[in-house]
Amino acid sequence: MAAAVALGVLLGCDASPPAVPDTVTGRVDAVPAETLQQDESTAVSAVDTFWRTHFTELTGRPYQSPRVAGGYTGNNGPSCAGQPSVPYNAFYCLPGDFLAWDDNLMASGYSQIGDSWIYLIIAHEWGHAIQARLSADRVSVAAELQADCLAGAALQGAADDGLIVFEPGDSEEIGQTLAAVADDYPWTDESDHGNARERTAAFNAGTAGGVRACTS
Image (cartoon, rainbow, N blue to C red):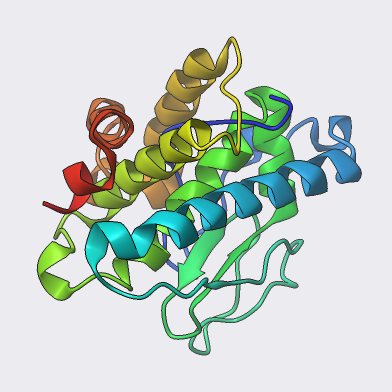
């Protein structure tokens, strides 16, 4: 995906879940740092631009971008409310209103599935930042699935606005990513994030129905 995109959801919002198993950390060196940085930058710009353009018209509330503190590596990430960052994680910190991610996580997912991995992670964590900006009555108790839905709405909306381009193979990468994060990550288990079917359904609801489908 050159300038582009996208999957469903993944990653937890906790600031300090356990690290992912070694089985997902291979072949990190196959992805050049400049490639990661370019895709991360494009994803951040596209998702933030979508929300900056449409958030107020869709919610009636003001929008301010969260701070982007990622990426980091290993144990060198920012702390959240006194809790240290964790290797191979991505998170939204509510008290600090920032997003961060370990670049080794980005690289491992990229090398195994594709660049959609990066767009998914950033759009999902941005979804948690959006939840913090919504009125309480529009935030779902199923917060992780709603973040998946918001990720789908943002990525589809960014594509509709010409900010990113869906490419052949993206749908397959979406399916692979959702299956991987539903099954392989101890901090994205079904009890709080939903299974692959539920996460795919939530993401698809956002792509098909937009933000209102996620917040009504």
